[in-house]
Image 1 (cartoon, rainbow, N blue to C red):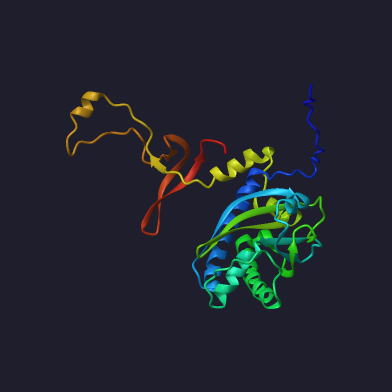
Image 2 (spheres, rainbow, N blue to C red):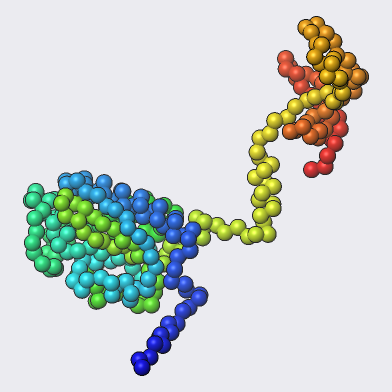
Length: 290
């Protein structure tokens, strides 16, 4: 009988390989913005209607990310200031060759297999990637405060060592539509670069501070305040017999202060006064403690 035992995998809880929900949402918003900006930039540079669609964002080790890529592909390594590890913007070589054809006035038709870029093609790709970096920096804002520049271009996903094999990378997937041709592209950024900033973008509030924060928020909510006489009991028959010009005695001395009430609850007493041409009241007594 074959064994059904499953192989156990070592999990390092100090370096979890899944994104927290709040972090994932912040990254999704930034990456969706980047997709829109990049699509607009490509349309202007390639001179063909282009659209970039964000698909998903995950966290993998660099080894897992590299293994998921085709053996031959264009990998643009991006140097991040202050970090040894590099970010990666990966795209099919054939897609890039089609973009170059459009940029140089061609039809974009390219049936060549995956191959290395010429010097001229590398220059064109570096220009496109520099514009994409500007869009990336704008979209991520304070999450990506470090300077980023194009470092090198590789054509073999197994030989392009952007980071250590066990280093965690935040990997985003996109579909780039240029004219009639669609291509899958990926963006991988070392997790250490972003995770430190994500905590600042989504600060976690300690539960012990909840009551103070709630009080601080409620204290700024506007409420309606009224200055009113004390309640007086009156018979229904007297109310039904009311007519214009009738007087109702309130039984409240003219020198006594009136009640300040919020939602029917008396909180203080105040004497009637004026400030300039407007009526006002002067607090004379507090009925409830804060």
